[in-house]
Amino acid sequence: MSAEAPRRAPSAASRPPNAPTASRSPNKMMALGDLVRLYRSHAGNFGEPVALSAFGLTAAETERLFSAYDEDYHISRFFHFSEAGGQKFSINGFPATHVSLDAEIETIL
Image 1 (cartoon, helix red, strand yellow):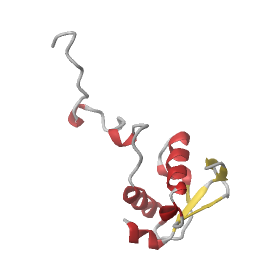
Image 2 (cartoon, rainbow, N blue to C red; image 1 turned 135 degrees about the horizontal axis):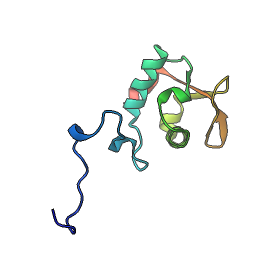
Image 3 (cartoon, one colour; image 1 turned 135 degrees about the vertical axis):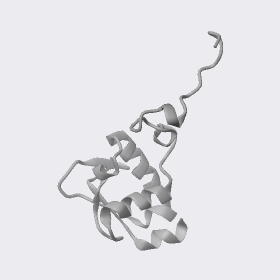
Image 4 (cartoon, helix red, strand yellow; image 1 turned 90 degrees about the vertical axis):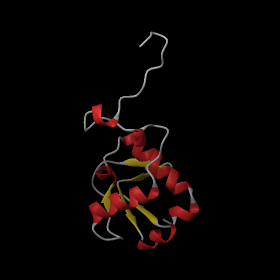
């Protein structure tokens, strides 16, 4: 390979299993369907609060992701943020530690 040739990203097979993927890049947001599935895996049922820290994101990613969804009226009406014990995050300037989702969010997936 010449020095001028562009470098290619390693294939998925050659990356360690815990290596970041494109879905975790700062420019890509977790898809709403993926977020709902992850929420349900932690909550069990809709309406149960889940710690924002349980989503496995950095503090900046958590704040960016949930703030973005909170800004969209058609999505935010299904999100309910609360403050309890645990790591605090700033969701559009408001402190929150947990989120619960309404079951009706499935109508927009």
